[in-house]
Image 1 (cartoon, rainbow, N blue to C red):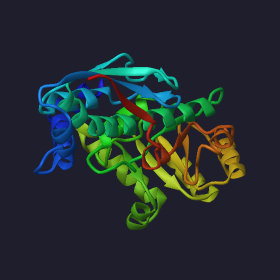
Image 2: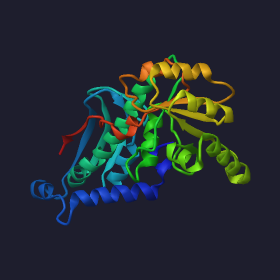
Image 3: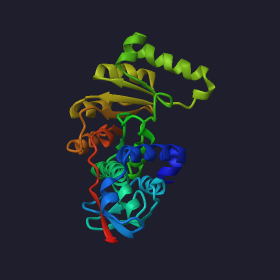
Image 4: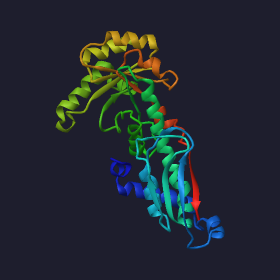
Length: 290
């Protein structure tokens, strides 16, 4: 399933259209209009300048479709595939005005989503051989969450909740408002039991120390998020685990310390950097024939 199927054509066309309009302004591509003869056709290729994982091909394809004049972006690699430095991943054909207009907007989206997929793949490589899964967070760019979480999956990592509606995540402010860990968990369970539509929704609670963990374990939520625990504290938390409750580490985790965290024995590691600190994959469009 590609990006188009995940976000829907309406969403994708709206965002691509807005991005193109932002780039073109009122006057259009004045450089291409001035220097490239009207009606001149040509072709270009998109090459990778570093190793990575491709994601977001549909963004570029739709960008080509909405460009005036429209051009064809044909991908030689699929989303989720690893790409290598110097490799051609796509070919672009059509009128040169359309190729040049679509270039930056198409690459901006493609590079961003591929950067997320590449970081996700690296994260999963780092935890290989442990029991831990790497998950994203809600720290996504506004309006881009479905697409960015799609890119995470293309890199082989996993999605945390999509929003506020599909999982209970009881954090410190909820606990303070509810009157404590026990009260917050019991209230969530009560709500879930009384709402048939929510009976399948998992419950997770955040704790900040081992004493809070003990209280949470008494109520047996589906997940317990261990916030900013040291590695020694994470190991102790794993030894304290009982029942079916899964443990998730979060806070202060980077690619540099990810392996150490995974080796503590936690089940899940949430990594906001998958989306909020991504470095775009370096791609370049080069004209082959004009």
